[in-house]
Image (cartoon, rainbow, N blue to C red; front, side, top):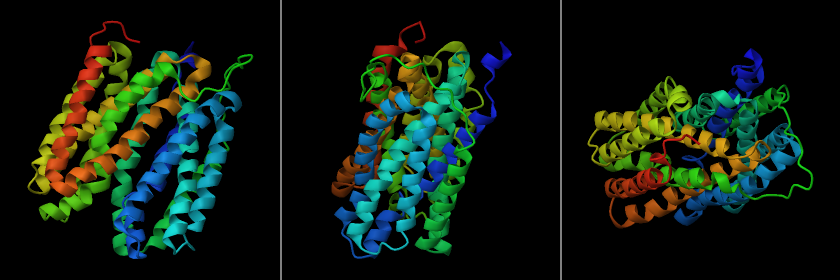
Length: 382
């Protein structure tokens, strides 16, 4: 019985470590690649394509990779994903043409979509059913933590070194993770006779839709925080990401067990309210202190809600469909981030970034309403 409920196995820890390093190694290009394209003579539209292209390809690959994970097993797909990422990252050294960088970004998105979906599926197969909230919650921590730390690392490397050093940093991480992943053993699900390929898991669509709404303000934060700081005259915008990372860590001290013992509503409802408060404070920020306070509220809410939604998506799916469920859920994240990057930029163009963030609150209010009327009022935990 003890083995069935054991969470912290070597394979589980390796997957968590691989996940956080993957998010850091990939996300360092989010704030820097658009700037690199502008530096090479590209337009603002081409710079924005650096964000959009990988999101579109990642979305397509997640739909396919989820089903492939259920058919071939996550480990094979993890290795394939990282080989694509490594080969793509190496080519960043020699790509000095904007068109070449954008083409590489397509392959980048393919490796990202396959790698992240497969690691998430591997984690869901290793987590004991009685500890789903806690186990998936710690995986969610790695994604949120990686996304919070990556901009800080990227800014420091670009300020003190160069883009080539950033590429080397990412490449070293990817190679290390690939070696680490070869040591992981992941159980395969029993094969279902005549199982058809599924592009998405219907039972995961609601959590994925909620994740999409939650990711819209997150996309605005990841993409425009540095520009927002310039608009406010704040040179230390990196302090926001530090605060966010701290609260994501703090949320893991209680959110996972709360999910398993009390149910998802005890985690997601306060998490949504905390994110709304955080974005509201962010939109009225006047200095580094208010920026930091905003990050604490948003980081806590995101750290509680995102892993809980992913655990819910996995819980609702059959064991042989966990890969597809993870792919469906993460697709929601990709779409939301893309909408946050592109959609909110239109608001910023016509108004300013403060109003842009206030507009993003609408997505979180809709998130809260949809969750409350579909899942939040149910006493029974899915």
